[in-house]
Image 1 (cartoon, rainbow, N blue to C red):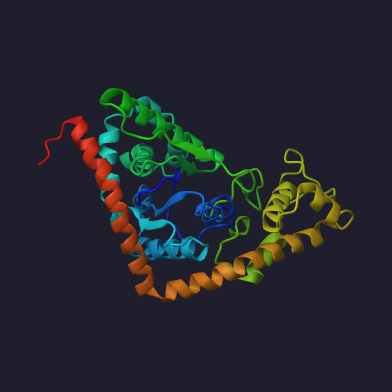
Image 2 (image 1 turned 180 degrees about the horizontal axis):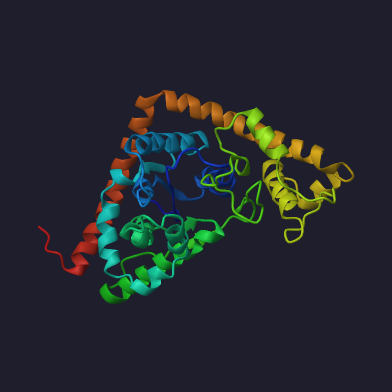
Length: 333
């Protein structure tokens, strides 16, 4: 994959069906980058095991995540798509980077604090060091841009800091990556608690929409979305977080501006508006869901696509790891 295009890398964990938040905040934008950039997309199964997983479920979810990425428009002829554990260089580079990361900077990572609170019975070392593995994922491919939501920006900054430290110590080796934050739809909030990010780990199933939800389920979830009592469709994140979140979703789905949406639903009340938002989501997800089911049923195609992607990724990654090993002084034959 020698190319003059700038390189983009992004990974997603195989933790079951993606939410609408994952789709609008990240996955939907990935195929749009394929023509302009050299794109590398990865199902990061090694990151998933910082929280205890059922092995059979993790395997199943890994295939489902890959199928959903393909169904969402990632083209293996244009982009690399593979599973993280199929490319051992991710773990190899992670160890070297761990020896160039500082304990203090890892302990400041907000996600470590959040996950430690959530999984107090399993605060494992991987939970602490996984931002270094994330840095390895990014730096392994000479990545220029990492599409992330605002909450993940801290991880890209850490990757830059580690890369800069290594470059200073051992000479220019790594490209310094930059975050690529989408302007719209970067942060979809919970339908039940609109001040919190939409997450499928939420105990209330009405708070998130899954990419695999049926049309009826999607409609019910939007109809029960928390709003406010004044009945006016107006964008105001501070005072009307529920309605503003629904407007954000509708805006991404239809391409309409907030002013357009306010005008369209002027005097119509929330019932009509919620139904329209649900319908826009159902319409947008239908072709993706159909393609997802088709790909998932064709296991041979899915496996050959991932195998091909892993082989190509290993070729690129191996060159970088060899260079890093040489620079740190590992004896090589």
